[in-house]
Image: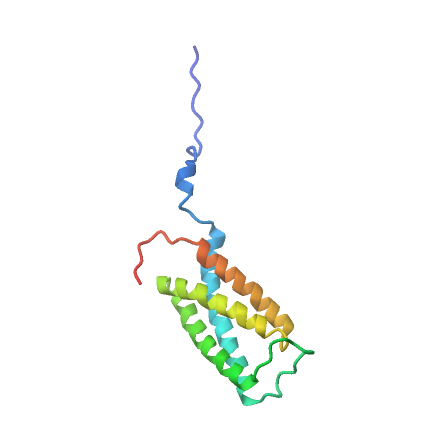
Length: 149
C-alpha cells in the first residue's frame, strides 16, 4: 500500500453552518439602504417644500385616479422625509430599531411614490425600485451580533 499525501486545501463546507450567514450583497445592501433612505429623505423634504411653496411647480400628467391637494401632500413628504433621514442615520450606525423602521419607511416610500407617479413618473419609478431593494436588503441581512432596541 502506498500512502498519498493529503493536499492542503479548504476544509469541507458545512451546509448547516452556511444557513445563518447572509450574502455580502445583503450586508452591503444594509449600508446602501441607509444611504438611500438618507438621500431619499432629503429629496422628499425638498420635494415637499416645493409642493408647499407653490401648487403650480408640479404639472400633472393627464387624468389620474388619485387626486389630492399638493400643499397637503407637500407636508406629508416633509414628515416622511424627516423620519427617513433619521432612519437612514440609524441604519448607518447599525441600530436594530432603524432596521425595523427602515422596512416600514421603505414600504411607505414605495406607496407614496406610487401615488406621486402623475407628477414625476420617471423619478417615482426609480424610487419604487430603490424602496424594493431597501426592503430586501434590510430583511435579508442578519447581523451576527446581539443587538438591543
